[in-house]
Image (cartoon, rainbow, N blue to C red; front, top):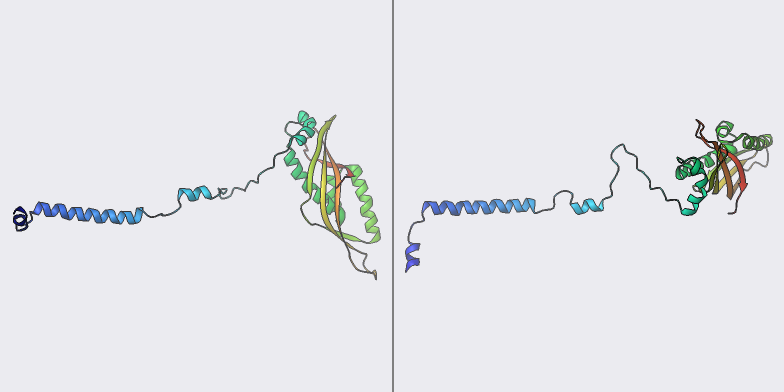
Length: 220
């Protein structure tokens, strides 16, 4: 009966130590699993789902739409003379100029208009501003949404760069009659406009700014 004989024998100290350390090791491994086996912090798959943000202090860069082949063909005349011409940057600037000029004309802000207009256009605007001032009226303009700007053509003629933009806009005008009139109610008008604006600048000039040289009606 070997089993009975073994049960009756004392356990050797060396064997006891082996069993003790095995139990301790199992306990430590169990604790490590409890810690390392859990998802702690950000997981790789979470990083893949989170859009990258610009670093602190860096501005977000909006996506710039690609210009179609028709537009690229329309600007080829100017690109041949001025390879640095950036049509998308030009459109962004022309839209800002459009809003500034419309508001400036409505409010009679000659200082804002003068650097943006060719002399002939400034004279025409001045005539309209003086007529409104003679009537004693004031006008305020509000854009109902950002105007749409489409670059129709860009070319070079002699030493001039010429670019035509088609603007579509919706705006609300508030026309305030002369003070003291008994009929005294401001006139509110909402309108949609479609116009071709032609901008020009001198090629190779130190001043890279464009000026408005012509305004024409366009199809809506």
